[in-house]
Image (cartoon, rainbow, N blue to C red; front, side, top):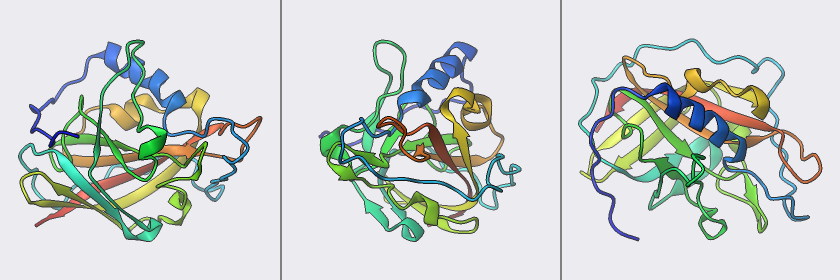
Length: 212
């Protein structure tokens, strides 16, 4: 895998791209219906709405690609980060089954620490069994997500909330829409398997609180 390059800052996302990503989330980080894909992930009933946006307490950082992601509450410490784009049909790429223990970053958005929502995705499970975000429901508001960047700096985010939503009602604007502060979205699948598939997405919302 090539070393991540620093992408240009993207402050605006066309509506057409938001619509494409809305469809992309339907296939993001999900099990594939194989009998070994048995991971269930359900948030408490109260976690049904997106958290209120919070002001970042640290200034935005210059662009630099993520190389490692640490989420202690979920037992995640993984790298290198997989670079993701869009498939030919406009859907969001996801890490391969062989990369199930790694987090992916959508290169069409900002880098973690820049102003706007940086998008990270990871598998809950795959045909091989539980994957990197198998313990996503252990994450709570106030927990930290630390992203090591290619320039050697770290962007430290504080979780502001989690949301579990049906894939048919994915909150596209809430997740991918522009923000005035540095934000992070960590997306995986959720819900109890139905006919071998997860019916929901779980979205972790976080805001930049420190830079080191």
